[in-house]
Image (tube, rainbow, N blue to C red; front, side, top):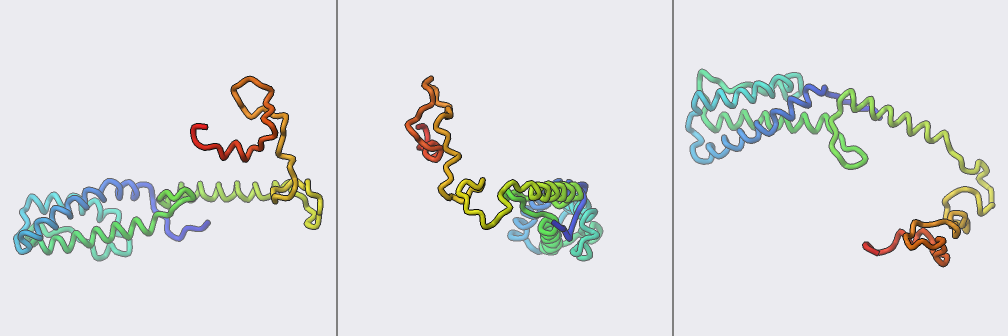
Length: 191
């Protein structure tokens, strides 16, 4: 599998460290914006927000959205609505970063595309290719033998071993009256 976009573990850690803090700060600024959109932010609030924005900017600067991102101006204190606009740009940039560098694996888990992840996937793909070479089925496609070693639901009942012990705890010989494994799998819970 080829990945067009790969990021570093350090950028992933920076994302994880800053995303929730930025979103919490953004939520507070949104609340302020609803109450007093024209009010000026205090120097303290700008400094707090800029600490987070600085860390985000450090790893997003080289991303496509990076050219739109800048810290809040500490000298000319911004109005709440202006700060909100700048912070929303950071939020969108973080969302783009996540979409760009994550994929979902076979278990529907989100995974970051890092060099380590790519190497693991390539190793898995190589293992899968090796497994394809170990085909033990019949090479003759026109073989009419019903006991041909495949699982095509023909009348091949070689899997049914009536002499086997299916793990019953009653100590008998395992003779279950010809019950098939399918019936054992379909027992209701607790049965």
